[in-house]
Image (cartoon, rainbow, N blue to C red; front, side):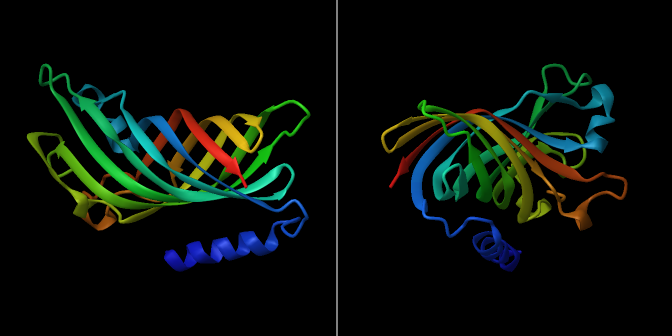
Length: 223
């Protein structure tokens, strides 16, 4: 997995048109986001009132590094700490609320386009992939995949240590000198199973993390 990520970096640096243009500049900054997160599973969705999804909001924050290789184009990476998971309720147990809480360290590799004009306000679009490394996993679901338990316990062994996610985002950027102030709505979706396949019940479907930043507040300094 790590070798594939390094290879993707080398491919991006060597094959993106214009990477050797005269406008090459580095940028660095940080971000903070409130996320609407989901654990998407067809099996859970089919349970009806036995297992209902509840709106789940968690935070994410991190550092950003960017390389501008054309006036409007940038490569973005960094390190992101993301809290995710899912809250559930059930009609069979009054006032019961169950939850699974996950945390990840994420390393993105994104391409970003900014609509540069004479005005300081720009529209930005970004997309790409990121590697999500599991940091912790706790759940009050019995054996993770079944129903309900009053105990909230560590279940990290039931989850994949590394997941690849697709990323899409758009937003606005306000430039004042070397300072870039940004608001971005960003969606992330796991492209492989977040659960350990060999530990699943035979009929359980693939599970994926999904998150939408509402929005992500970010700052970049243009060196």
